[in-house]
Structure formats: structure tokens, C-alpha cells
Image (cartoon, rainbow, N blue to C red):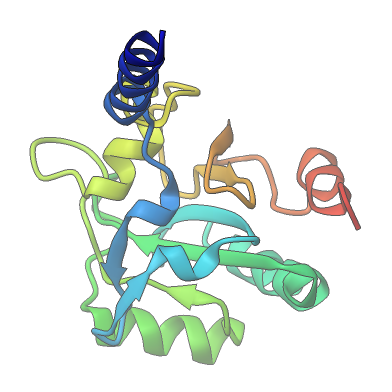
Length: 181
């Protein structure tokens, strides 16, 4: 009987390891200034991830993102912006130029990451995870344009993808942020 129990426990442990889905907390990436951000430091926080571009018609969303961060940042919200030039070549700047633009024009104080690819063969690992249900265990969230939004819960699980035209102060996002306050 003890032998069967040990075999069963071993099987369950191996099965759990094999089928365990990654979370956001399993990743790291470089910030716009070159430091490594270990996303495990975000455990217990809600995270809004947005791909951005400074020459897009949706660029004014930076202002609303900053306002949202100022209102809910103390309530365990992190906003992570990943600049990308993948849609309409609307992010031609360098990391330094992007950082200067975002801080001077919009007063951005939330986390800006280095410029990355979010589609194609050189897609950043975070975006591979965000957009694939095989990787994240939840949804397939193809990025369709600049300012696509992903909601990630306190446990690091992606829970929803919102279209680029959905403003960050949308009722769905506000309700999500207020859950558990």
C-alpha cells in the first residue's frame, strides 16, 4: 500500500511539473534604460501590459495611462509599456528618444521597457507568452495594433486582452482594478 501511495504521489508531482503553465513571474526583460526587470518582483500586483508607439494616433493614451497609474499605482497596479515598431513603423526612435518623449511630453513614471518585436520570428518571449494559450493557459490574444492591452492578475496569469482603441480608463479595466480593494 505504501509503495502504491509513493508511486501515486510521484506521478502527481511529475504531472504537475510537466503541465504547469508559466506565469508572468517566470520572465524578465530589460527596461528602457537597460536594467533587467525580474517580473517575479510583481507578485501580488495587477499588471497592465501595453505595446506602445510614439508616432501612433493612439499615442495620447500615454496621458491616460499615467493618470491611471497615479490613481491606482499605490493599490498594487503596475503598468508596463513595451515600445515596438511592428505596426506602421510608428516607433522609429531609439530607447533614449522614446524615454525622453514619454517622460517630457506625458510625465510617464510607470515602467517603460526597451523597444522590442511583438510579432514575427523575433517576437519577445513575454509576448509569445501573452498571445498563446499554449504558453499562458488562458487565451490566444493576437496583437492587432499599437496600444493593445493585456490584464495580468496578482498571480501572474493573463486574464484578458483588450483592443488598442479601448482606453485604459475603460469601465472593464476600472472594475478589474477595484476588485479586492
